[in-house]
Figure 1 (cartoon, rainbow, N blue to C red):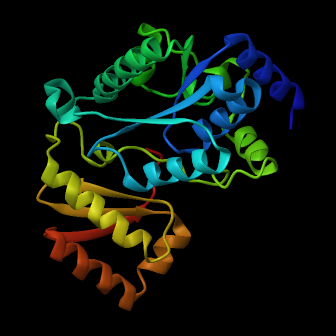
Figure 2: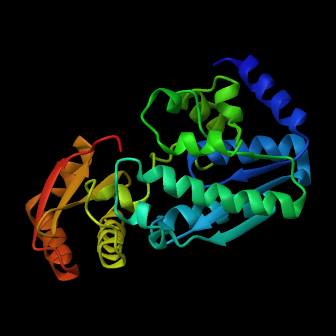
Length: 259
């Protein structure tokens, strides 16, 4: 792996003087807050938003890492369902979420007299359709990992080398992504999706998406290995029984997609 990129990233962070890291608990932002803390010490602060739309396990992971690294961690709540343009679930839903979250981070940064807000966007992310990136650009948020040219595989490599337990964490997206565009985002649906995913994860499945299909049908998307495991008759019936108890009318199984 390219050690020069790591040196460049350290230089970029030092040049910023102080940073507020939009910290989700994922692989990328965990790597970023670690490096920012190494280079800037107490002038690197982590900030995590909590909402019924976000995954509880991600928040717990974020709390664990900052505690281990002894990094100051600010937590704030977002009422995303109060934003009509977000709750209607259009294709650019992520723009409204990101705009709200980064707006709150801007307030925190001004209050704390922090020079820059930074996020964990990497160079692979920049070639994908990500409406939230537009909000970040509008609000002047910087992405040091992308600036230094870091790809996902490089972030995982260096995270492992540094001993970060987040190095092999599967990519994570908010619960709203489980709903098809145009399907209104409401608390009851999010609760059902969240409960279902937590139950399946307790069965030893790490990487999944529990999609909401029309008619209150659950589609469990898994890697090939996990699908083979979870569709064994006894375990499959256990999953179906539990999801129907949660409120789903039917359950289907499929292969994991990216989002």
